[in-house]
Length: 473
Image (cartoon, rainbow, N blue to C red; front, top):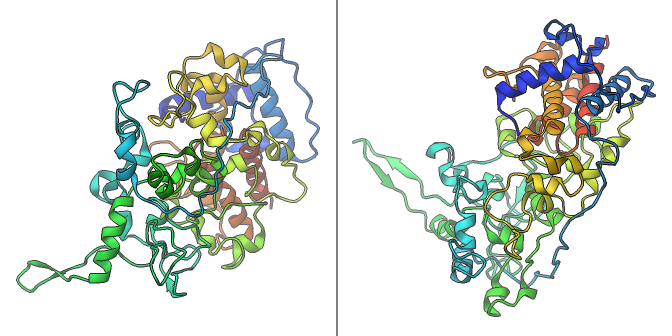
């Protein structure tokens, strides 16, 4: 979804040249050109009606973007092309692992004569879900040996508090934050789903002897957990389609599997959530209590500020149109009601559309498709790619520019993941609520990953109001 950094720098300059900088964006004025492209006469500018400085700048930015990049009158019509989720009750099923699914779905078919569904899914170059998290980042990171120290405390099925593992998201059938972390179905846990077991470390530790050699210290219980978990070590078929044991035992009865997943019951568990908390989906704006304490819907405010956040990939939180800190007196209603928030099966519709040559969803590449955008955006029909569509890239450049103003840039010129520069980096009291509110919004928009595409109105509102508040005495 993101354009290349050098292209975004050029686009950012062009965007702010069109918009013209108000005092709120004064930190960027030295880089702004002194001329503006002539507005297109077919785009009448509506005078800002907002009463706050941030609201007025937001209205001006949106009006000028409309002038410069369209769409034309009548070119956007909301037509929700969402497939209808299957929605079967799979509560009696357990997880079996993709190797079992491959027994049938690893075969060539008339609609896939050259490759199977499993082959389509398991190419890491195209589908990050297929990456083995034990060998992430060139084999330098193994999330299965990593724990989340800044998340909600979790418990196993015996009520014993255990350290939550990163594998609860990077695996098949990992529990949600409110569920017991032991998922193995046995006599002690008859309600288990046989999903990835987060209740204890599964790896076999090694001990370095005095002669420098390593010897295994075999932990029988840990080895049993490892044998169970190893087949669930990716984001596999059942993460989206539901646990498949009954589907397999029935010989493939489609009523025992969700052929079309419901994004709110699947994708949202990992991608629309508060950082590091699988299944903890925001249902309203953040509060000072949740930002500043270890209680409430967010266990620890530091979840937004630590390196573990970078692995949470809350890539669709803006789709929910909520979860940000909304400053009193500011209007966020357009972000709450932005059309993307009204798509019934959000992620599936835009990122996994049906293959025209097959009744089955496209598993090969989760990048957004311009053909999907064209369902609602008439001007998208004239585009070859989302990444070259000025309607998208100029809005991304606007959001990126505001992120850099708020949190600074890293060595490559992209927004700084740690917010070490900009207004946040220069703010003197980083323990204050004033800082934490703005930092919350910065992290939410930054880690959404789409540079505002999922919900431009909400991203713009959160960033502008945070900048405005930090600039107040």
